[in-house]
Amino acid sequence: MKREQQLKRLSLSGLAAGLLLLVVPEQAFAMHIMEGFLPPMWALAWWMLFLPCLWYGLVRLRRIVAEDGNQKVLLALCGAFIFVLSALKIPSVTGSCSHPTGVGLAVILFGPGVVAILGAIVLLFQALLLAHGGLTTLGANGMSMAVIGPVVGYLVWQMACRAGIRRDVGVFLCAMLADVVTYFVTSVQLGVAFPDPQSGATGSIVKFMDIFCLTQIPIAIAEGLLTVMIYDQLTKRQLITAQGH
Image (cartoon, rainbow, N blue to C red; front, top):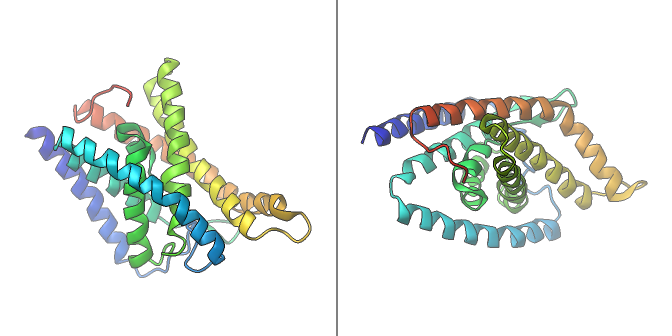
């Protein structure tokens, strides 16, 4: 009971922070590809790739909840963490904006399948309530932030555990690389949809990466450190075990 009450307090704190973001009178121009920006062919293609990931994530989510109903609160905490971090809007010197993704914690605790569901819910709410992303581009944004980034982070986490690397280092690498890979995938998505007239898709991808990387690398490092702190607090309070997923 004490464990559940602690988790509820943590998740409610995260949700409260998210609600504060909703009332800030600021239009969101962040990394998520905005509504209507992708050509219809590419928007549909990314949706078709994202739907099977959602199905698999739903299967994993139902299995986790069926095995242990107490995991619901921890799932809510992970969802709130993703929502709050990915809703932050940090201006870039290039005129674009960047933000953390917050997926590392959920990847470590539940694996990448569940993150597809949590990420989709977060992206849907942000598109509807924060003008952050969009519905037609949700498939593309979901693949970058809720699928490919988390999968890479999960692989890094697993390799770190098997190699005997210190757990805090593994958590840091998982969260940081999941963030960086998200932006790399977004650059690819934009580059192939809008190839450069001279250098083609490759040149366009490099240009988009240049825009994001100036601010995203330090943001990814900060996100990795924050995730280490949150994971450390959860393990110290015995709200999660210190075992690898």
